[in-house]
Image 1 (cartoon, rainbow, N blue to C red):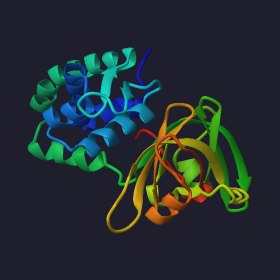
Image 2 (spheres, one colour):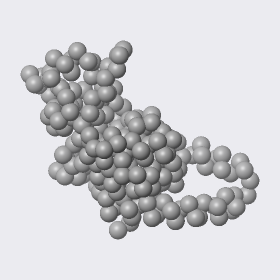
Image 3 (tube, helix red, strand yellow):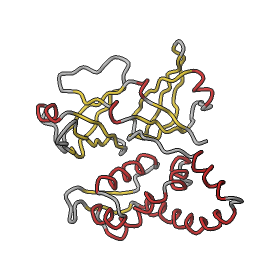
Length: 254
C-alpha cells in the first residue's frame, strides 16, 4: 500500500522526525529514543503525534508510565515507513549531486514550508456546500469522525478540491476549546469527543492538554490550570472539544 502523499512529503522534508522511528525501534522507550535523537521528551511526543495523524495507520504503539518514561514500539506500518526512510537516505546523496547549484536546494527549502499549527489531521473531502461567499467543506477523518472547514470559493478552486480529495486540516492549539460538562456546543461548530492522554501544567499561563480521538488521531489544546482542576480533568478523562469551521485551514500537496 502506498504511503499518503502528505506523509511522503513529510518524510522528504523532515527526516529528523522520521529518524526518531529508528531510535524507538532500538530503544523501546520514548524517553530513551528522545535522548538518542537529541530532542526533548515533549518534542518526541509532538513528532509521534504528528506522524500518527498524517499516516493512514498509527506508526508508533505506546503505553504511558512504562519503564524509562513510557514504552513504545513501531507498528507494522511504522516498520514499513522506517524501511522507506532508510531507502530515502540512500537516495539523498544522489539528489544532492544532481542539484546544479547550491541555490537550488535553498529554493526547494523555501517552497516546502513548515507550519506553526500544532494540530495536523489527515482527512478526505466528503462534502462541499456553498454558503454565501464561503464553501463548507466536510472532511472524513476516518473511524466515523468528521469535521467541517469554512473556506472561500477562491480557496476551494485554488486547492482544486473535489469529493474524495485528500487534505491535511491545520488547527492551532489555541483554537481548540475544551467544554465543561454543563457547556453546550456552539451551533455550527465542530464538536468531538476525546480522551485526555496527558496534561502538561505550566507555572504561568495555560497548560497543554494532549487529546486522543476515537480514530487514533490526536489533538493538542490549551486550558487554564484552575479550569482543569475545577473540572477534574486528568489523564484518562473524557472531554468534549470544540472549534469553529473557520479556524480549520486546509492544505494539499503542491
